[in-house]
Image (cartoon, rainbow, N blue to C red; front, side, top):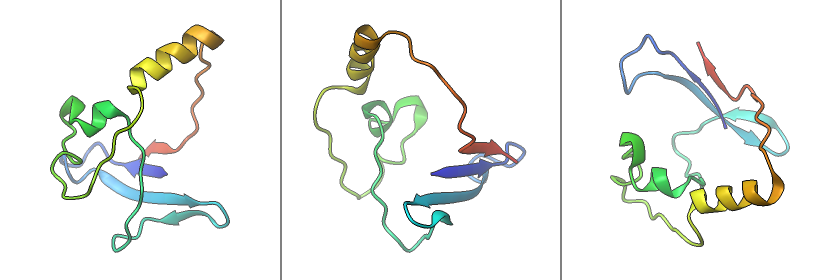
Length: 93
């Protein structure tokens, strides 16, 4: 997913464009009439940081397995420091 946003706009109006990566065609514009499957962490599903989009929807959400923060902590403990790089998928206009 690639998102371009504009911080000068009012909350709820800041997203300029969203593109979804297709394995064969590269990034394609989000199609509002389609349904997409997404994966988010448990914090966001539960409305963390004021993100209540998924808690207010009629769409089904599924949770399974351990919590994301536990998975991350176990990974770092097992494999050492995490190297962070910017990918350019989120850009400000």
